[in-house]
Length: 76
Image (cartoon, rainbow, N blue to C red; front, side):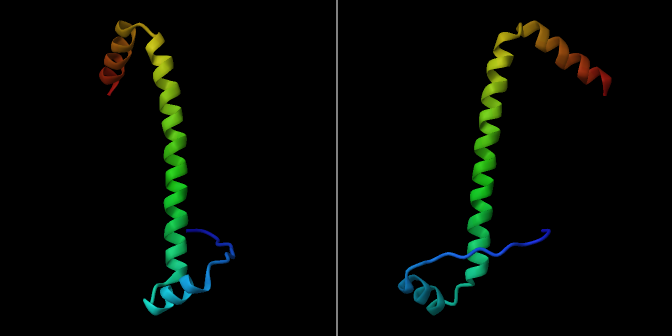
C-alpha cells in the first residue's frame, strides 16, 4: 500500500466498548471493511462493463467471432 489518509467516524459508545472488550483491532477492522467495499464497487463496475461488452458481441456474427478467436490462437 502507498500513502495513507486519516478518517474519523462516530460510533455508539456501546459498540466501541464491546470492540475493546473483545480486543478487536479497530484500525484493522476499518481497513478490511473499506477494502471489501472498494472490491465490491470495482466488481459492480466490471459487471457493468461485461454487460455492455456482451450486448456488443451479440450484434457480431458468430462465425466472424469464431474466426477472430482462431486467428488469435494461431498467432501464439
